[in-house]
Image (cartoon, rainbow, N blue to C red; front, side, top):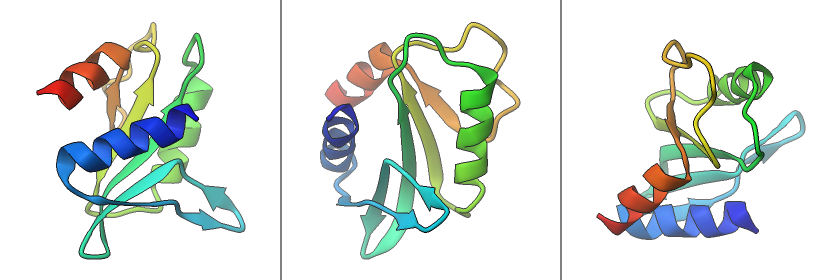
Length: 101
């Protein structure tokens, strides 16, 4: 349910259409499209504590997508340095601020 609400809010914010991408080996929480072309790929990890394992799995998922904005949305930022990952991380506060603006 959290994933659906976040995907819908981001689609409205960026004026994109929603899609869910699923393959036999992989499923993502959301893919936002413009004219059927991927613009944003997103994952939602709504857990109390983000681990390096969460980020590594997200990185693996996002590696299947090129030339798109990659966004991980979490309850709170990780408690360790995550600057070397090739995707954006938004905590709940950042998500709300971005959606409202």
